[in-house]
Amino acid sequence: MTAEFKQIIEEYPQPLFYNTTGSTVAYKLCIRHLSASVSAGLASVASGYIYPHDVLHIVNLEKEIIDLVKSEIKLVKLKGLK
Image 1: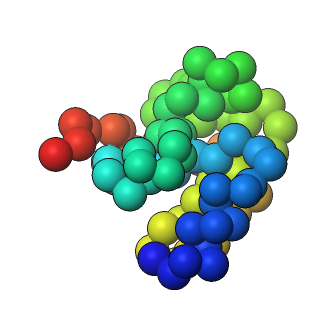
Image 2 (image 1 turned 90 degrees about the horizontal axis):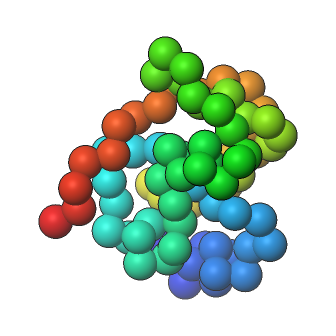
Image 3 (image 1 turned 180 degrees about the vertical axis):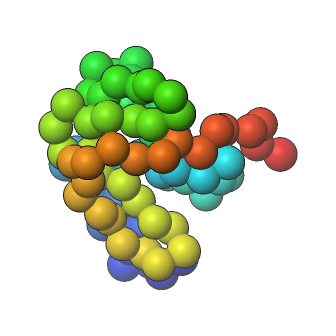
């Protein structure tokens, strides 16, 4: 990950989420798993999909981009981090 993208994440004004089975990088940067959006009141879940109540800011760590998503998202279940 580039230093520039890491700084963008650290200074980002909105809650950030990711949607993979688990990421120690995301954990260290305080990016929450997408499932946390439900407990934060930002989305609801049904049949394995997250339905945002408003725009969610989703981090793609591999592409180093932040997507703004308002449509339903297929939830990837979180596994334990090693």
